[in-house]
Amino acid sequence: MSTVFEKALCKRIKETPPSKIRKFFDLVVSTPGVISLGVGEPDFTTPWHIREASFYSLEKGYTTYTSNKGLIELRRAISKYLTKFDLEYNPEDEVLVTIGVSEGVDLAMRALVEEGDEILVPDPSYVSYSPLIGLAGGKAVPLKTSGKDNFKLTPENLEAAITPKTKALILTFPNNPTGAILTKPELEKIAEIVIRHDLIVISDEIYAELTYDDVHTSIASLPGMWERTILLNGFSKAYAMTGWRIGYACGPETIISMMNRIHQYSILCAPVTGQLAAIEAIENGYKEMREMVISYNYRRNSMVSGFNRIGLDCGLPQGAFYAFPSIKSTGLSSDEFAEKLLVAEKVAVVPGTAFGEMGEGYIRCCYASALSDINESIKRMERFMQNLDKDTQKVSNQ
Ligand code: PLP
Image (cartoon, rainbow, N blue to C red):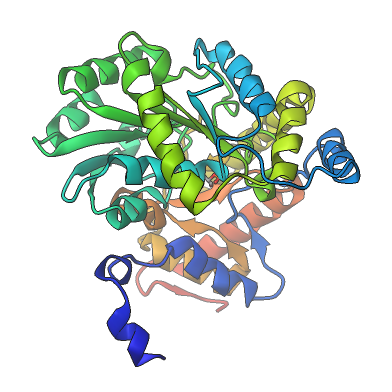
């Protein structure tokens, strides 16, 4: 340990907790023979023609920086693609190519947040928002969602959380970890409140293509919302491209130019090979993407019916690729359940509390995993619950 750096570190980073998901994965990696339902990424490799486009680009010598905002061909393709959600963005100055949605969230926070601003974040939701708000000097305010409302954000909860310091709301549906979506009529109610209180929306729509029974609606497409929304999306989930690190942010030129100002100093541009692969994905990747979604849908149904059969109450997730069963019947906390299950049965799941306080009593299980692994892990969970003594909370084969 360096005491010099201990003194030099800024308070904001010292106050930022490490990601609970990462901590849990360290444990998983050190346990041999584990079936992991923990990682939130597709089990598919990026489709061949997308990989091939990147090989050709390297062969042709495309190895330089691009424009800060990203290749204009990619921005044009993104702009064209988004018309399917009734969205119109000018590729010249309303689209910014980022290093995944992750960078988009960071840029949005750094461009918007002043010391003490409150940003509303659905709880539970993806792990990055609150730390990035804190690092930008803001205060993340949890917006509670609960199993009894299928983890949907309700207008009542939103209204109750707004204070004079509220600047923005993060919307993140389809949701990681709950799989909840918001339908158009539900979004219309949220939009009415947002407009009335003059708030900004940062809408993380990374799972927009991964819906099963309903078509995704973007809040930015509703009347009066385009001008107050930063839309974030990317290639990681829909096209099985997590490692390529390509995402995008869209919105009015006023905000995109300021996000680009941070991006041009801190990142310069997203990697050119990934950008060229992304053009191939968005222009020609629809067929494979739909095949992946059909496969997730099948696995979703298998996993959810398996959980309900063994006594873990689980609603049918409407989007993304996560099931979020309740483990309350076991009497264990989410952390205890995940840890004991890992030790006793070598199945890795993520405790719901990694995504916020409202995740207590739940675990996140990713169904973008092999069907054989899903079936085997459900068998192991069933045995785990049979061996669990509810009074002593000990597992008999441990
Ligand atoms: N947003 C959500 C809701 C996610 O679940 C994830 C990854 O799990 C990300 C953003 C990160 O996306 P990217 O790979 O584009 O940085």
